Amino acid sequence: MPDSEKRIVEFERLNPLGKAVFLGGAAARLLGQSIEFVLERAVDVVVEAEKAFKEGLDPNVEDAKIIEEYEDPRRIGASPEDGA
Image 1 (cartoon, rainbow, N blue to C red):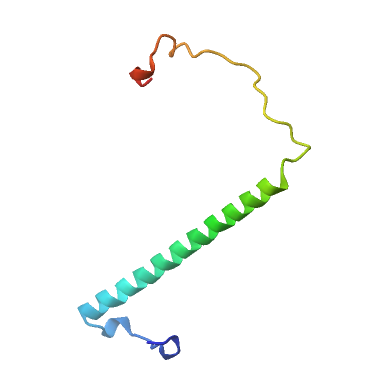
Image 2: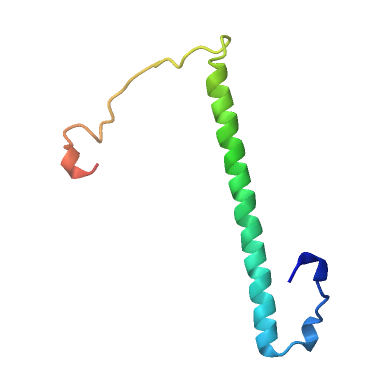
């Protein structure tokens, strides 16, 4: 049915099958809009990240520096197979 022929449906007058179809359609529409919103936001993030990458580093920001290193005493003597 084209969008120009939308009808107002009185939910109270629908039989159980009609109510199920109506609610299923509303849920599908909501899910579709939610997915579209999430994808649009993801595309925005990717575009902004690519733009920032192409612009390069800010000369006013220094690279990260390691201030101090330390050994975790719980890890001393642990092997990679231990999973710790």
